[in-house]
Image (cartoon, rainbow, N blue to C red; front, side, top):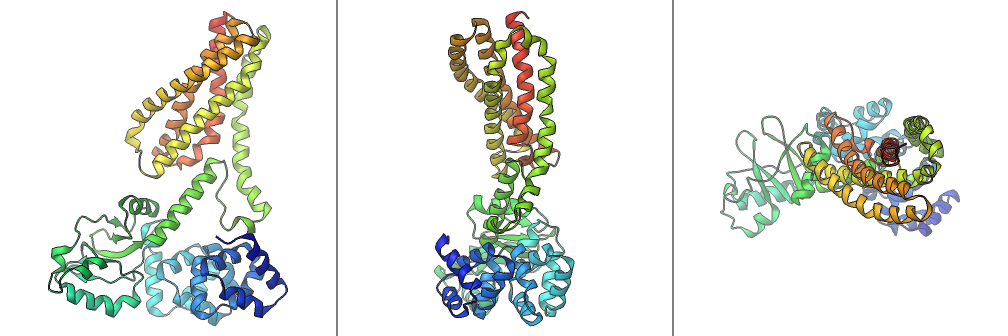
Length: 447
């Protein structure tokens, strides 16, 4: 991770147009650090150091950038440099860039590719957005199951430079159907005369090219795979999802979930370079929805005005009860959203999840009610204190149930679970919690 000192230094060098020093700075830093600094800068400034990169490092830095900044860099390049850069990119990276780019850039990019690269890119773009097909690499070494280890090693040596990875090697039958995979290490440690069909891993996980890319990335993480084979509807091998792309998918998914859980839309690009207007626009829609939803709380309070007039001491504990219920609901929602993301919880687990979280909420409520009763007894009549303590137990139990079930129900109807997580759960629990509180008070105090 680059620190603040080189950022300021590079920015100053670019602003001063000191080309010699910029070249020296670039030579002293690895591609991922250079990419990070370029993403922090205005696109008009970032193109200057990018153009000064050596040809062999230019592509490395470019592929480290996210698609938004890649597009900005491309717009600043002349046609020759533009097409050379795209021609050298890995097909999967190029397909994602073109798929997210405006039509003007996408048309210009495809038109300048060689026939072979254009065909490969078009094939990847033919898969649905966010599917594995958009992220897999077709540049692989395919081995037939009847080859010997010695012959397989010869193929790897001959074609290895053209492949994105040689560590996981797909093995196919006569119909190009995936038989399994072998690792490069398997070839190295076995005798040359050993047949691949005798050492192939036939149980290796595989996914369809049309399946969601995030799910495939999570599968790789769970199975500890360096690369995941991708097949078509007839089990024919079409590509590999490599670990670097899987890591990017997981990071992007986690970043999106975090944004949704904080009641904001995901923002593409580096935070430092994103404008204030763009950040505000990403947050305001959800805040408007939440403030509208919070009118439920106002409606509940209006409905119990008479109760508050008779026992004004009840108003003292409203903030505490709303805060406690919201926090318990948020904790449950966050736990379930995370469990859904990593595959620990499935839709059919809804009853089990609700039952478990209700008991957690009840246990938390009992612990917190003890404190509420002690504090309440010291400042208000005993009946009010008992109403507060009883409400804490009920609200915590209810909040845990709401927080745990809403993400699962959202997934069932096709909505991102993160959208209905902490902020939405808190708003709903506030309103229903007040109903529980005042109803409990009326019963216990005989109002």
